[in-house]
Length: 184
Image: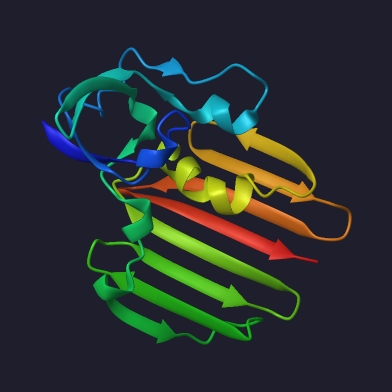
């Protein structure tokens, strides 16, 4: 039994961020199935299985891809920030790095006509990374999305002919690194 957080279920959107108790293990990837075969590229990344959970006084099942041991709303909680520094990086007007007690590192830089944000999150899966970045990057698409998906890396390039955005998610050791870049 472990505690987890419901982070993105469309079925249970009113309960997003709720702490639940899993009665079966989420992290056993054997027997996983794909969430969807509906030509939505980011959904092809999500694999999981139905697991038994307890929420309040009710027992039920949830597709485990929507579970994380992080509460995404609290992932970058400023109260847990142990270091917040401005760093000098070439080609950036401002560049900051924050380190948190939960091991999360967040970097944010702004150039003249573009910006970059990097999240380094320990013990994260590709599924968690997609659901974490989805509201801010994938849901607000403004151009043609070009996906590249393999076992080690996920890339998304998007352009409307004037502006462009890029997303890269890479598993590196115990961390998942999520990098977003916006520019003209």
